[in-house]
Image 1 (cartoon, helix red, strand yellow):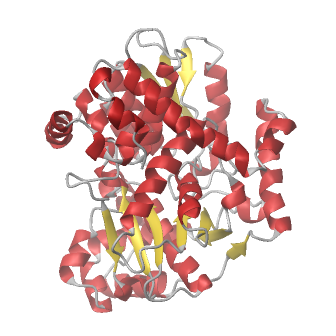
Image 2: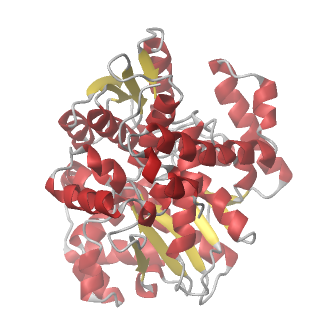
Amino acid sequence: MAKIPFGPSYNEMLDPGLIDKDVRAKALAALHANELDPINLFNITWKDAANKVRKVVLPPALTGIEANVVVMLGCGFPSGSHKVGAAYSTLMEGMVDGEIVPGEHTILGPSTGNFGIGTAYISKLLGFRAIVIMPDNMSKERYARIQKYGGELELTPGSESDVILTLEKTRELMQNPKNKALAQFELFPNYRFHRHVTGGSAIDAVKGVGNGRIAGFTSAPGSAGTIAAGDQIKAAFPEAKIAALEPYECSTLANGGCGQHRIEGIGDKMCTLIHNVINTDFVILIKDEETVQGVKIFHDGRESLEKLGVAREVAQSLRDLFGPSGICNVLGAIKLAKFLRLGPGDNVVTVATDGIDRYFSVLEEMNHRYLDLAPPVLDRWTRDIFLGASTEHVFDFRIPEMKERLFKQKEQDWLKFGYTKEFLDSMRSQSFWDAQYAKVQEYNQKICALRPQAAEEQVACSSSH
C-alpha cells in the first residue's frame, strides 16, 4: 500500500509532546502564517505550544456557583473548531484502511457547519475534492468558510433541526461509488477521537484546578462525538456525571419533542448512532434565545460582566471565544452543578466548540430583532441568563425507564437507514464501546507505519496516555 500523507496519530493529537520537535515547531509556525500548509495536521490538538490544554475557568461572579466551570476552547484548532479532529480521524482511518484513495474519491461531509468546515479543510490539506451537505438556513459565515477551503455546498431544506435530511441526501450521493462519506453521525472514528483526545484532554484540563477531579461533563450532542469524552472521564472518575444538552425548542432526547431552534451545531431531532447513551446521566434543556443573548453579552457586554464582579481583563478575554453552542454548554454546566449541589473544589468541564468568528451575522440579525439593546438590557440578560440559570428542565436519565427512551429513540432513527436491531442492541453493553475504543491503538500503529517517517516514530505511536 502506498504511504499515506503526513499526519498525526491519536496519541499525538492527545499529547503533541510526542511529535518530533522539528515537526511540531514547523506546525506551530504554520498555524497562523499559512493555515493551508498540510503541516497544520499536527496542530489538531487541544494543547497549546506549551502542551497545556487551551481553557478558561469561568469566575464565580459570572456563574453564580461555587464549583469551577472549566471550558476547553475549540477555536484554537486549525479551521477554528475542534470538529476538525473528528473529520481528520474519519478521513485518515479510511485512507489507512484503503477505503478512501487520494485522486480517486470525493469526500462527502454531512453537517450543520463545523464538521463541514473541518471536512472541507482536511480535504484541502490532503488533496481531496469535498462536498459538504448541510441545511440551507445556517450562518453565512459557515458557508463562506467551507467555500474558502474549496468545499462545494449541497444544501438541503431547513435549519439545525433538519439534519436528518442531510443524511438522506448523503446516502443518495453515496450511490456513486466514487463518493465516500465522512458520516459523523454514524462512523466511529468520531467517537474514538473524542473519547481519546477530548476525554484525555479534559482529564488534563483539571490538573491543578479545584480538587483535580471531574464531577460533571456537559455537551450538547450534534453528532454526539464530543460527548464520547464522557466515557474516558468516567473511566478516570467513576463518580462523574455526564449531561447531554438539548434546545428547549427541540427536546428529542428528553421527551421525544421536535421543533426548530437556532443553536447551531446541536439538537438534531435524533439520537445519533455513535451516542453511547449508557453513560448519559442527565438531559438538560437550554433555551435557544439565551444562547444567542449570551454570545452578545460575551462579545459586547464587557461592562455588564464587570457589574457582576468579573474582572475587566477576564471579561475582555471572553470576547471572541464563544459561539451559541459554547454558551449552551456553559449554561448546562451551571445547571448541572446546581442540580448536583456541587461546591468549592468541584469541577464541571465543558467545551466551546468554536468562536465568534462565524456568528457576526447572527449578532447582526439579533440587533435587527431587538429595538433596544442599551446597557440596561444587557445588564438584565447577564443576570437572568447566567446567575438565573436554574435546575428547571433537568431530566434524570439514570432511571432505567428514562434510559430505555434513548435506546428506543436510536432504534426509531437508525433502523430505517439499514442497521439491524441486533446491531443496535449490541450497543446496550459497555463492552461494545470499549471494543470500538480499543481500535485507537491499532490505528496509532497503522498511521505511523504507513507515513514516510515511520522508522523514527514508533515510540510516539506506541506510547499511551
